[in-house]
Amino acid sequence: MNPVIDTVLSQLIDPFRIGLMVALVITMLRTAAVTGRWIPLALGVVFVAVIVPSTLPSQSVVLMEAVLAGLVSNSIILAVVLAVAAVIKRRG
Image (cartoon, rainbow, N blue to C red; front, side):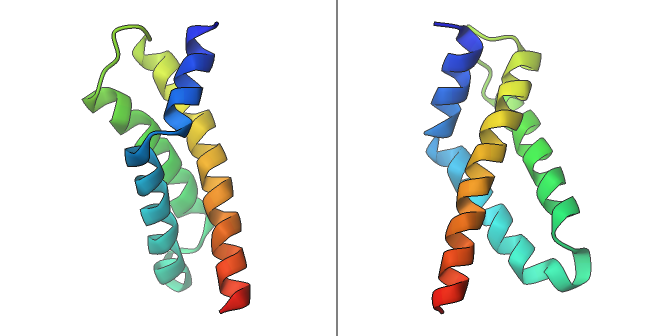
């Protein structure tokens, strides 16, 4: 299989990355009145996409490919976390 696709799939189940996205959404919800919603989320997705492969490099994937794969996987994780947050907010 393609190494970039493998990287995206492995990032989608990475507990550290998922935890960072959950923390990003919680922080955004608490500070939305001051900082807004979309700019902090976009900057957080980019930050996590860059910082994780920079600090935990992979031997099989180039840094730029890992960052691009991180942008994709972070966006998918963020969409799921936002959907769960919306369901929780409606029920609560």
